[in-house]
Length: 113
Length: 112
Image (cartoon, rainbow over all chains, first blue to last red):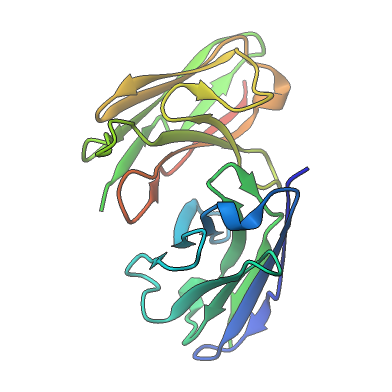
């Protein structure tokens, strides 16, 4: 059974950093692109970042480019999202996904002073 | 960016009815490999989203054939036949043909 378990969320002040993790199991992690998607409270879905199976290429929307970094450790079957210079508009539930097919339970990030 | 326009924003339905949701993209979603990366997801209340249909019309494993997806290029439709209570929630269309990946704003399906 495919499982994606996120961790690392919490309350953080504007301008500070936070790193999310997602541990994958139930599939061969290094065969798949992975993606972070977020959902602000009461709002729709927004794509945040994707990474190729080898980690050789990464992709971001303009809203997070230069502030967020997606990475992976295939030996540990773990996906990461380093979030720097956080803003109030980054407040959301962050989901780790495998190709929009499998989703984690989500982790809440609240950016507030 | 590809804008995904989803209509209607909400639908009230009686159990057993059929409904359709429209999703129109601002650009063609046909990729260079000839495939169209338009997907449909359902988010039930308090849950993570779940993909139902991928590449316009392919049902994900375990998705009942009451769900069907049609369309091409820029115009897509999700149809749900004989709605059941477990179908309620917010439906999203999503495109992964072009970066940045984008989503429709959602259609909330609720009981009449």
